[in-house]
Image (cartoon, rainbow, N blue to C red; front, side, top):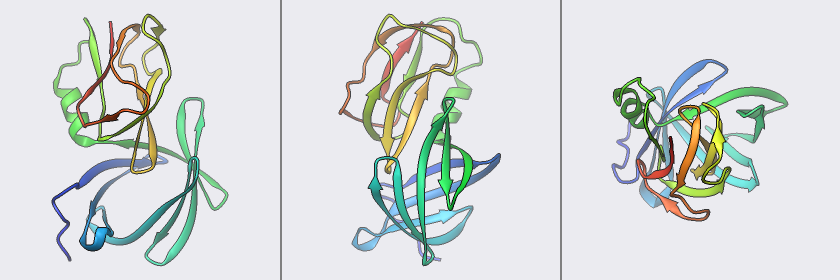
Length: 175
């Protein structure tokens, strides 16, 4: 099995209809995308065909994948079938989990991966519920809604639409 290029490697936990998979992606020679799915190498080529639509070729089979929001949850439409989907950066998940279960005091919303801020969903001073979307970050042509970890008030929006952010960079603060 070829070794993935260490530069710009990304690892995600992707849950599709309740089943979690480990997806590792990196740019290899000649900027080709290399992908490991649960440790198995896949040949992947992906192109953004439109807003929220990817044209993907996986091991020679072509798929059109449409991303939809249904009641705040992300779903993927593939070949006429709808799949509930969630994408997490496990490094960010561990960091949030180890920060403690207590939700007292101000909480920073951080970008789970490097990307671009495409939407700020609420303004500073807005009351939000736990799990309510606050900011949308696009990475690898997928949009990820960053949600409030608790019920409270958005005291500060740090991110600006169109700005590039790094993994772990503060986007907003909820008190």
